[in-house]
Image 1 (tube, rainbow, N blue to C red):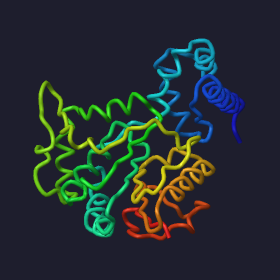
Image 2 (image 1 turned 180 degrees about the horizontal axis):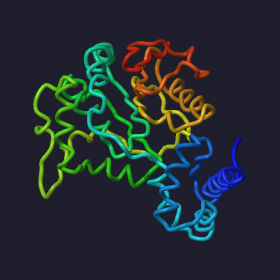
Image 3 (image 1 turned 90 degrees about the vertical axis):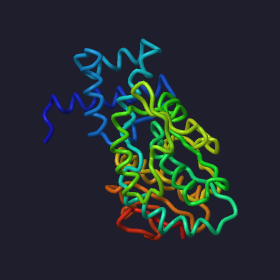
Length: 275
């Protein structure tokens, strides 16, 4: 049984999310409550607020405040070739199938700062599919989209990126794809020449048509069941028949209401195929 304090805090958090929804276009009411509570708790401390109600007051009365909360509401943690075995499975099991199509569309949903996009762009280039592919990189966080478009990462992260790339079956050296200067690594601009960056919400926006691959990893875990159903429904309606969906290692379609629309193509890597 919840204590009175916990119940009041939960009510304050719900009212904060309602205020964000009313004062902006962002709707986080379908996100995992526990995750939001933890991250907004960090925001509460950062902005020296005593309660979620104080955060709500600032949302209601300061039009510049919601953008300051966004980094806490949207998770921006990724890395190039994160979970290398996923990209190895794409390289060895999925791309040979996609090679049979004359043109390809790939949707990187919840692309954050672009790490997964560049991983896929490199993979498709090395497998000779880049010239026939259009990538759609979407996120609700416009600042993250700007970082994705810039393709600049801290040089300290490159060692991990390079090790992931090697484990993912990389055919050369990752250093062939970036230039290092002033403590940063800037990835080759030609890698994003075939990319459309777009502000898109899995909560409220509609489908992208005729996709051959949707990669949306480590996003569903932040949604409640209803929102997970909606997001997977979007992916289902966006994919061509026999198109592929890749989700995170800790995510599953098992209890999703759209599960029957997919078959398990590579179970260990959570890669599904639209039936």
